[in-house]
Amino acid sequence: MNLLPQSPSKSLSKAFLKQSVRQDEMARFKAALALLLDKIDLKESEEHL
Image 1 (cartoon, helix red, strand yellow):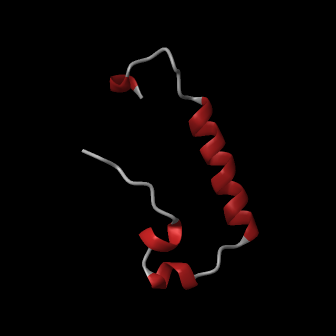
Image 2: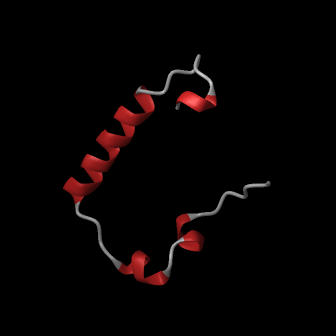
């Protein structure tokens, strides 16, 4: 299976692209993403991610 990276403008429908995102929502998303990425243990196998 080959995965091809796409830009958000190609992968999202036009309706989602027209919605605006508030600054506080984006900050919460970034903080949650950072926490999630910090929890990844590189020594673990894929089964435990």
